[in-house]
Length: 216
Image 1 (cartoon, rainbow, N blue to C red):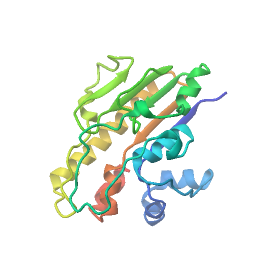
Image 2: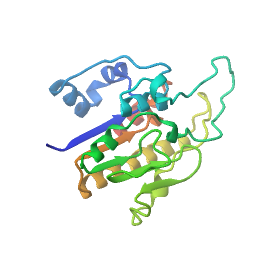
Image 3: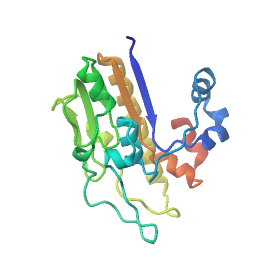
Image 4: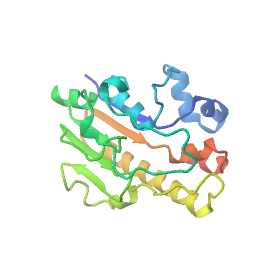
């Protein structure tokens, strides 16, 4: 069996890909040379819920991860605790692969904090506090993993500062650089890297599109 490489891009919009395809030659080549699908999302269409379905092949009613949002709430509120991934019902595809002896390398998945034992390595980050976890514990001490911490707080659609945008760009670059290095360094059968959607939601709001295109 050959190696399997999976790159997940959270929040990627097929309409945005079509709109900026001239600026995204690599993605467009993958689209043209491979199989392009436009599947429907699950409900509710939140990131944690969707990724749990991708990981397990189950719908939200079966895997149990549902991030509820009050549609009538007019203020932005942030979770006071992490989504508890211990409540996921069903097995992730990398746990199944590991059970069959395949070495896995799982980097920065949604609902991947705290990390859990896998047949290989797993790196997860908190969305609420500055903490990166690895399995086995103590991996990658040569790296400054704090550079992978998420950017906290959301300034509102009309308050994006240059500093805020540059922090996002730096985080994207740090995450991608880390993922590429681990991809080259580690021995794996299944490699999963999840690119979270911080820059993509800014594009959705029409913010600094051309500045961010090279970093997607």
